[in-house]
Image (cartoon, rainbow, N blue to C red):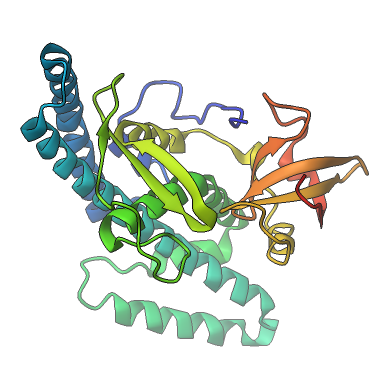
Length: 302
């Protein structure tokens, strides 16, 4: 079940990859934006190469190996680049959130000391940077709305980031994700998507599941980061409750959810302990707002 797409304030017009990423909180760093711009430039170049590759394939009625190898090589490097950029951004968001959550647990009389310790740590880490990142922590300590924005953006990126991460493990490490070093099947081997000309990868996940994705799909999913899927994301107070619930798939847990008005829904599939992707009996939409969920309980998969 695809999440309902609600327009982000910046999603009313068609945005490029760099603009979408730059709209995320904590993406105001000049060097992150430079990387995003580089990825957008290469994405545009690759789209031209993909279209040319498809034309050549249709004309020859067979795979043009030299062109295929060239596009495949650049596509792999693009995947590595978008993975590292998102990983870096999510790591920064995670550090700020960890600081805020820690601050909330500190007694009022010890808050100043806790903040000063964090300031010292951040400033030491910033000694070779042109700009200190302490302002992000200070803002989060004072503004709960900013913290909510960070949480939402982090959770909103979960599905696309985890998919890219799994592909990257297969391509770069030649391993099956979450398998403790099991060798991947034909890592780096790719096929041609006969609709777009994009490179198509098939890769094995933990539990002998298989995912298939094109580079063009990944780029499109990254553009979706400008959309608001918060009505499919479980509250942060509820997410930890899924950690102890067994998975029935690589990333999915099946639960019954209870809403704040007492209503319950069974057959709810949650990805990565936070994102509702399917509700049994409702194939096209989620019949409730995930932000209204107050509790979850284990439900054996059928």
